[in-house]
Structure formats: structure tokens, C-alpha cells
Length: 230
Image (cartoon, rainbow, N blue to C red):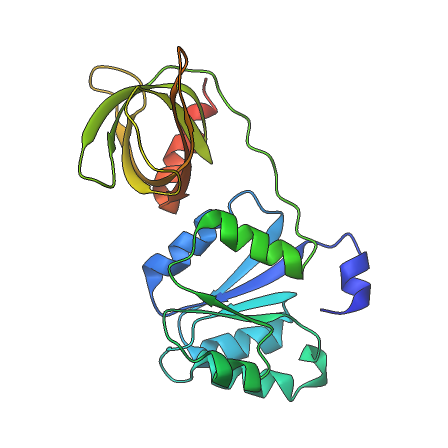
């Protein structure tokens, strides 16, 4: 990224490249509150074309992609003076770290990756702005499927598109993953199915679990539409 871009008020452009549609969906959901423009590609050749066309401020590339690997894309871009200082990150489940760095990668992130780590990693590379979600104080019924297999019926205390606080005396490990079935109202109201992660456990009269949502983007969007009416 050029110094001029870094110092400007322009909205950052981020290129996401991965041949797995569900992972692109996950990355988009992580960036739902970010003030940035997203460009996506499903294979290495398209990623290279998109990078040349859009000159993004940050590239997040999978390694194993059809037509061209993320490492090959990185190596070719580093031969272009326009990408000499642009952060290029490999986000992958493979263990080709040394090869990636030899090709000019700025960093190497191992899948699976959590939203907090993802956002913090981006913030270390570019001056991205993240909007704070407004929390709506509302009691909604939900069912949590915890990592140990327990199903727990709970009520929310407050909800936002990035997470919720669930009132319960049940215990769970911080950083453990869970599935949230959140009913948008009562009786026959629709349900959104969310992936989540426990970020805080509280004891006492107002005890419960603070959960960060990790997607999917389509369900986050449905939740956002509902909260806008409350």
C-alpha cells in the first residue's frame, strides 16, 4: 500500500481470493462492520487479474486455488512495482509458510481463523475502520448447541449483529465454538442459525454467556434486518 493511500481518507480496497465459497462468505461476514470495499476471486488467475485491475490495499489469498496458487499470484505481483509494498497475506490450511515468504508474502495465517484474530491481523497491516454495532436490549428465545454437545435453551439480554449476551447458568469454555438458533420473536417467528464463539462467561444473578457471531453472512443479514425494526 502506498504512503499516499495510507494517509488518505479513501475507503480501503481488500481483495479476498479463495476457491471455497463458504470461506469467502466467512471472510465477508468478518468484515461486515469494516469500512472497506471488497473484491473477491475464486481462483488464482482471477485473483491476479482483479489485483491488477483494482490495485487493492490488502490481499488475502488462499494457497491452493485452481489455475494458479496464491503463492504464484504473490510472486508475480511482487515483480510489479505497484505491489512492492502492498500487504499480501496467505490464509490457508496448508503448511507452505517458507515458500510463501520466499514469494514475498507479508504474513501467513493458518485456517481455521477466528473473527477477532482476523480483524486484529488486518488492523496490524492497514488502517481499517470498524463500525461499532449498536446493541439492542431485547429478550429473544434461543437454543445454544455447545461444543460438548449440550443443547441449552436460553434468553438473550441484548443482541447485535456481531454477538449477543445469553442469560444462563450453564457453563462453557471461553473461546469454545457453538451453534446459535435465535428466534426473531416468539411463537412461529423465524429462526436464524448462527455460528458463534464464547468470549466471556459471567456468574451471579445476571450470569450468562457473551457470544461473538462468526456468520454465515446471509443469516447475519437477516438478523440485521430484524434489529433495524426494534
